Length: 352
View 1 (cartoon, rainbow, N blue to C red):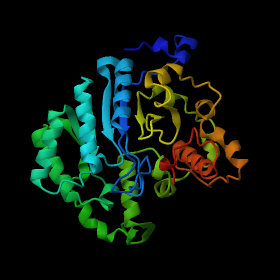
View 2: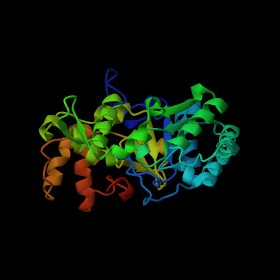
View 3: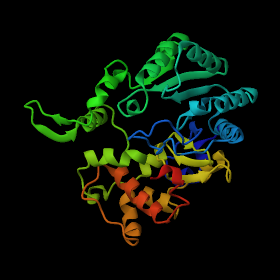
View 4: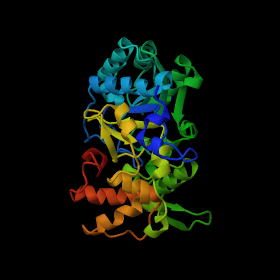
């Protein structure tokens, strides 16, 4: 397990200054492909996206995380929708078990595949035998536009019986039995206030906004599109002093995509390195927020610091943004579409 002093930045700052946290978790994105295209997806996943992470990439990242964090290392398998590649998912789990890399903390799914009890029990049994500690089932207004809720309910119910209720996460539990699917057909109708007057939003949009109020999320990836527009209220200047240093220093984990790209925390589409070029533990040791690239700009000045670069290429501000991450993603989307800074702002799968 590494000591914080092994990072170059941590060696240079004073004892009282915030340090760059050790990466203790890694989310391995099996694929950008998903049977859904949720409005809040951080990674812009959809049926048209692709990529499939090699088993060897997963094992290399897993080994590196163990070097970094020792027994506190936690790996979770996500996507996209990892159960689109069930056999490949099993290969990764078997390889990790052969290498004695410890249990997998979590596997995520939207449950689309849980067509019958026999299949559910068969797959859950396999996950348990391969040291998967927890299962996460996505149930919310966004997924249920694309996924029938009954298979997801079936999966959540049987998983709680086989794994135990404390080892099953339903995101979000409130929507499990709230009739969400049944109300969906009317979502394009205008929502109304208590007095019957229209709100200017469809029922679908009203449900989206309510979901955000209950469970706030970042406006990155696809969430920086329609959802962010619904909630946008501040000009770009409101974020002039909002740098991203705390976000990068405080991220206790990374996500690694099918191509080896490493994202800090949930900052999708901002590449801090690639494990095909540099092992994960070396990326952690070398990370310095004062560096001269665009990650350094974000750490010093936040997304507002990217405005001059974007304006030189023709970027025009929106009247309002929903938050710092909305501003960042909107600028990065523009830069990516114009072929700029693609080594840091990529891969294309994370953008529209």
